[in-house]
Length: 115
Length: 114
Image (cartoon, rainbow over all chains, first blue to last red; front, side):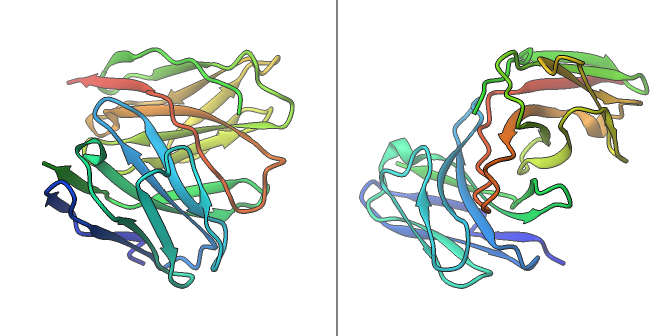
């Protein structure tokens, strides 16, 4: 199993450009998430998808859109990048444990710089 | 979700036990205590979780105070590979519809001294 994979690993954008961050998981998980992590900070939730066909806003959704393409894939789109979106982006997926709690599995991250 | 408080940083010698504290004085009866860690330049990884009783797994032990207002993550024999930021997170078990949102604080940065 590859787990959670993200592409690209690094990206530099100019202000106003758009791009899509890709995420895929091969663990047959229903739930997927996008987080961002700014330097020296904890992770903040951007969007999540509890199941295929559903998406919901997290703590910091402004400036982003998401698509749950199928059960495996969850993409994050920046329509018009801004320097404030310079961050490391992590995708995660989760499974339901034996005690009804969920363990999240994270990808390696995408390091995005907007100049 | 209720809030947690952790020290910003801790140091420990290699091959010695490490006790990482977490205070959660406003914890509710349905909150699980989760620990994740983030190694340098990597995404977070799950470590352990518990509700009331102490828990052990291959990575660590979780000791939960009787009143549940605090907990301690125990690494029994620290190695250099355990140097990471450790996050203590509360999750309400009532919220079990697949939207397992995690609220990360800034965690404890653990440094292992060779």
